[in-house]
Length: 181
Image (cartoon, rainbow, N blue to C red; front, side, top):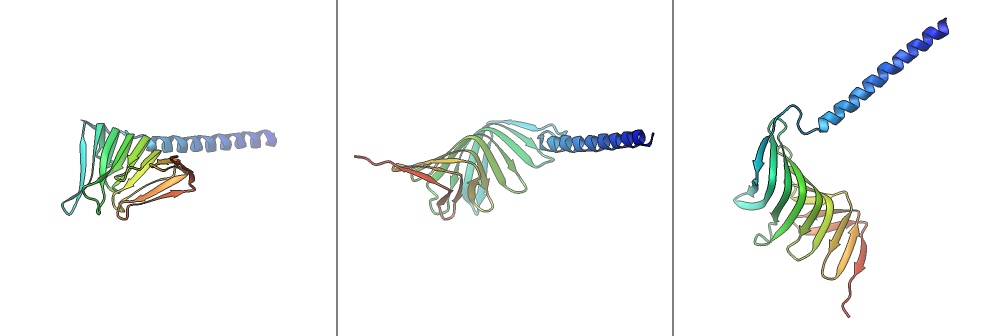
């Protein structure tokens, strides 16, 4: 009889632990859900600007945007924009993406889906995710990158572009040189 009692107690303990674990997974999933019991403010064709000491740092437009005020987060669809470097204020880096999200507190924009970056010198970079840190003035990611210039094609595991120094760093590059004959 003691064996059956211990078996039932272990079964109940296992069920309680499983229910708690499942609840934690559900909570984590819901934490990632952008709605969080908040109805967003919806915008059509918004334009975002960021200035520093009267200098335009970047501008982005989107097809649609949703602002979640309580979370201080804005999400976007079909984004295109320009990022201006300090040394080449008349030239810009062009960026397009399927969607994005920006946090007002951290001033970090995360873009995803079919990202294309056109640098002022003609280089192009293609990737699936891009993080724009407005405070540090850098563009970076941790996903595969394809870089194309007039003379080479480079595949890499990630990228880092410093807007101040205008230096693009590719991690673990695989280069193919294109030679005109």
